[in-house]
Image 1 (cartoon, rainbow, N blue to C red):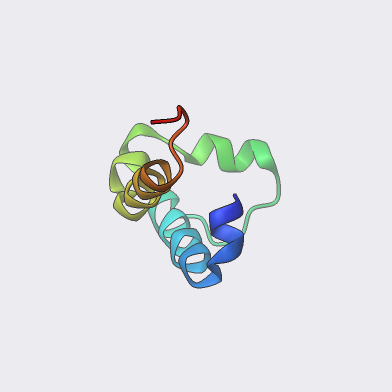
Image 2 (cartoon, rainbow, N blue to C red):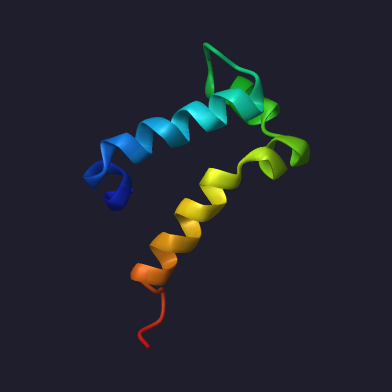
Length: 64
């Protein structure tokens, strides 16, 4: 979350990818969004995968 707040351009690009992958433009409830996140939608989110991988590379969960 910190890295997304630090880089708003990445945050916006990631949000757009999630919107496109889940085929949602407006969301009225959290449960509606959760139901739109399927395995197929997650497989389409390449930028999300890259963002999470890079963040974990820069800030590992376990000290190296």
